[in-house]
Image (cartoon, rainbow over all chains, first blue to last red; front, side, top):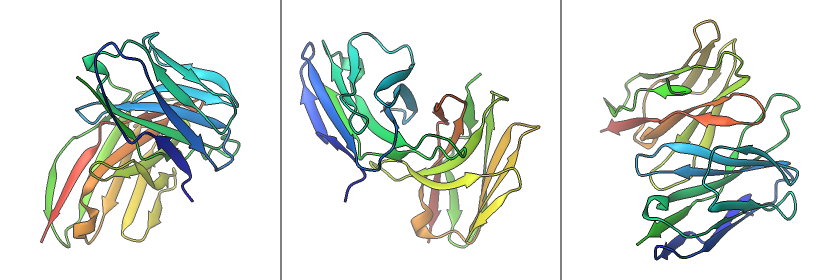
Length: 115
Length: 109
């Protein structure tokens, strides 16, 4: 069983379009994240949600809007796509760090290419 | 200064070699520390957590020095399958995991 699954795996779209990436985790974790990995392979946190509530928003443009319908899902909607949005987007989840253990489990990534 | 800094490498080593990676972090209030491994075009996966007392998992040894804000990873008897990018990860609080840029390791026959 896939622990953190995201769809689609690949997404090629034109500038100006609106697209969504879906993420689901079956680990029972309370916290979910979106990370962006750019062409230089740097993984940067975008958003963090805990039990459907936004915890972290790392100065991401308003064109990016996360939505968490329940704690097992965190979707990412992107409006008016730009060339610079091309990257790999990773969804991740982790348990509440009650014991300091905040290991994050990652989905396989969505490779977004804006043309 | 970046929150988590690593030497990007690549480190080219022969099979059987011992190799060490270092990482520094800027936030002294950081709470927990990890090494992740990322293979080409794959997602990052946890390699090991890092504790102040140091911890070992087979050929891998991780150390944390809170006073110097320094984390290390030692790999002994390198295998071809160890070739990957090793990511230093720091929990800076409020469930924020900050990744270093990664250190690329290439193990050759």
